Length: 137
Image 1 (tube, rainbow, N blue to C red):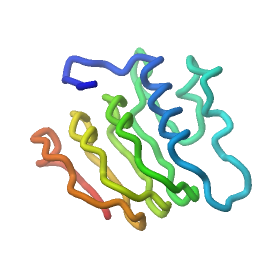
Image 2: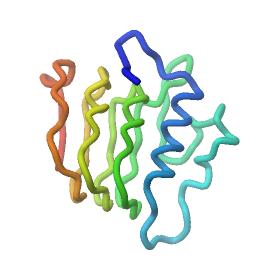
Image 3: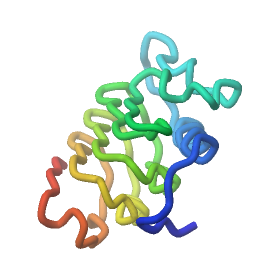
Image 4: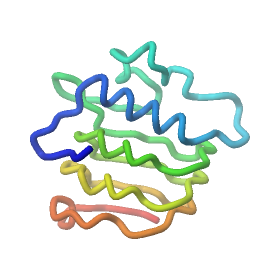
């Protein structure tokens, strides 16, 4: 799947991207699953899911803030389906593996915090965020 600047993140695709990310990771030791609201039965309400911020009409996911949640696993390439994403904070978790190249598809993307994880590789080169990109590793 290739995202272009004309693509928008429709409700079903955004929801499925978030659910896929949730399924491809697991929670380490924590006090229960903080993301019980992240399920396919509430696809129309994904903007009400915990740690998801939306804006606009139609509602678009613009921020995911999931620091220190005990996540382990890989960051799913489907994160690139969230075409309106501006901020992604996954700091202080146990993510590993390569940083997905699909992050290069995010034309509005400007803040990435993957600090204190075990992810590796290079950020995808993308002229859209080279000038205004803030990142922490």
